[in-house]
Length: 191
Image (cartoon, rainbow, N blue to C red):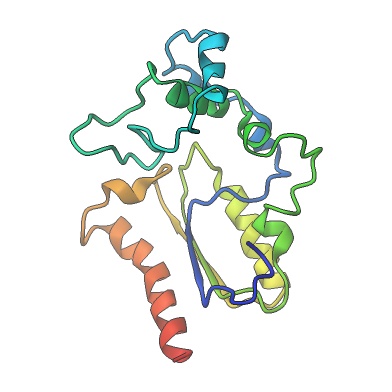
């Protein structure tokens, strides 16, 4: 959360979800919708009936999977069907923060940057189709306005969650390392 007694010493964010007032967050994503099978709304809504609330799945947007299972969503699971339908239809914010009425002050880093905010470095793929790079640029601008030590690495040609497929020593690897180098400098200085 924000305004906590012991804030993080530094932040490194990769292609983070921020600036929720941006119109992108309520726009459908046709490239995601195209990958979905036909799904019945009553099946999708079974996610609300599951007890306990499902907290695991075979898939994440980062491409991680449960041990031994194939990567990719399992649309026979209401949780996977629900999550990807919300993303495809531009309803993620409403699903995660219902009744927000356009007020994202409690959850949006862009709206919570203040003087004294932790040093922050942003890494974002320039070709990201899941979280547009523009939202990270707005965060960077806000950080600078408030005098926060910050920076941003834009990784050319990379889409969302590129970190999962990086090759050690590649250009992408070297570029994203700027964020880790930043963390090392901040932490070493503050010891």
